[in-house]
Length: 76
Image (cartoon, rainbow, N blue to C red; front, side, top):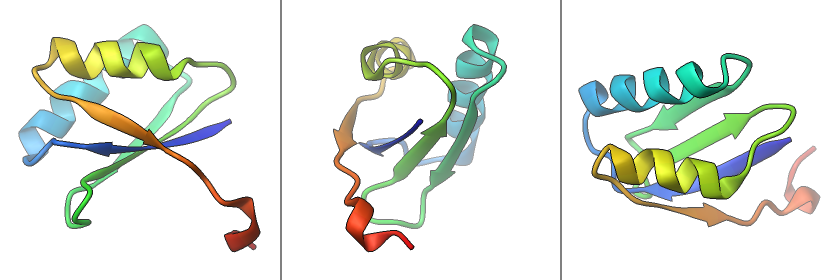
């Protein structure tokens, strides 16, 4: 499963804290950020996780995110 989020994260040190926290909760996740994108994209891959848990994790770090739809027709 892959989910993509628009975030308000601006700095690499914040990214490290968020990823550390998320991996502590689920070490099997793959979490990446693109801070150069205007939407500060966070991409999460994993077998089973909930968008709500991602929202709560970012909120605990003082940030917010919005899940973006993935258009599978554009992939490939």
